[in-house]
Amino acid sequence: MVKNICVVGLGYIGLPTAVVLADSGYNVHGVDINENAIETINKGEAHIFEPNLNKKVNEAVERGLLTASTIPAKADVFILSVPTPFKENHKADLSYVENATKSIATYIEPGNIIILESTSPVGTTEKVVEWIEQERPDLNFDGQSSQQVYVAHCPERVLPGKILEELISNDRIVGGINDISTEKTAYFYSSFVNGEILKTNARTAELSKLTENSFRDVNIAFANELSIIADKLDIDVWELIELANHHPRVNILQPGPGVGGHCIAVDPWFIIDSAPEESRLIHTARMVNELKPNYVIEKVTEKVNNKPNSTIACLGLSFKANIDDLRESPAVDVVKGLATKFKDTVYVVEPYINELPVNLRDYNIQLCNTVEAINKADIVVLLVDHDYFKEIDGDILKDKFVIDTKGVLNKVVGQKQGPIGELIT
Ligand code: SAJ
Image (cartoon, rainbow, N blue to C red; front, side, top):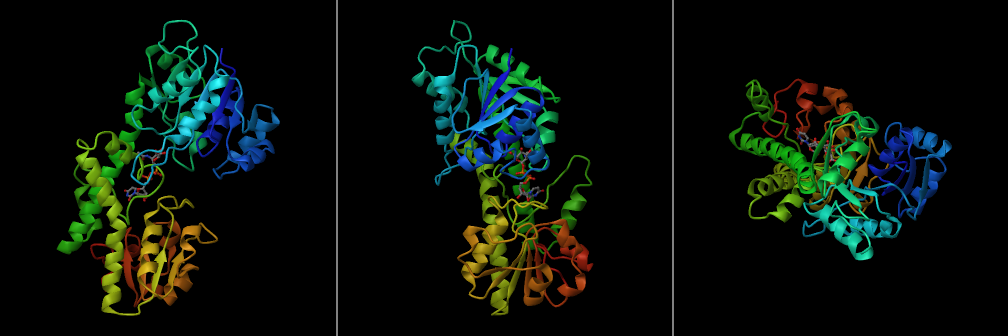
């Protein structure tokens, strides 16, 4: 009977998972290398923001069902939820998974289940087994003999902002290193997940998560490429997509300044790295999306060249609408590129942050409010479709040159829009 869980990595996935498990009555021991996070959690608070998380951490700690430490403890189930970023060469950096695995090795006992939740290249779950075997030759993983330990991959698929709900309501894919690992892990998830538990093997589970995000990347790349084609042919890309989407089997996504976030802009590289010759479409899509910020910078540059000393205001910095998350944000790349190119101050509006992120502080960039930024600017570049920008008073955009990468401001000013969003007066 599973009672005690050890969750290694208390970030955006690990901490919400820990409180959901505590809520279901499990004793949860959370582990992280960040001592501040540990101290905060043990005080009954969350060190990251996610709706309702603080309250849930407080309840779990008060009830004595959640403790946090830098040191693992014995448990029935170990969940690894540490980051898998990529290195400069786009290869996955598995050092966090390796260190987390080795950190639990001495605590593992026969009968335990080890679950890798981190988004991982194909073969990582098998590597987890190898890392444990190196430290613990006394344990077995063949699904048959004595001293058995069960290992599986169960990728997380939650959307930031809805993590606590989606951890329970989403369907989960569970892939073990053998059938018995799959069965035992699936049974464990069914104790707190309402969604369907889909069983497969570890390698398919690994590729399924990467596939979901690559599917999205390829489809956004299609929209981004269309926006560049439409620009060349002088066609309004938003009208074009709207029309094409009336076809019952066509559903084109929306173009933008590029693709950001810690998942869709990262995960396709794990597929490309494992099968470089075979991943031609996925690779090309990634390049289309990665180069889109440069295209926006070029469009602004053309305008500045036509009217030297123009002042620029950029609206939005986050990687998508209505959030404060700037990770891998194409808007940040555009702002940085413009500030590098032009000596005059670039005015930036981001209603979800109070100060510029560290990587933008060495540039000639000033964070200010929408009206101030637009009033100071000759060129207004909309980079994020925050609802907030949909409320802009169209009058203040008169006489401004607008490049609207998300197709928002044409509705505000009631004017037709050019291919990459310039308003046509
Ligand atoms: N974007 C566009 N056009 C669109 C849709 C999105 O340019 O039509 C851009 C967004 O502006 C953003 C990026 O794509 O820069 C990614 O945004 P998103 O909302 O598509 O995805 P994420 O990164 O917030 O969350 C994704 C989700 N995966 C899928 O939708 C397949 C989520 O379910 C995953 O849990 C998460 O990645 C993850 O952790 O992998």
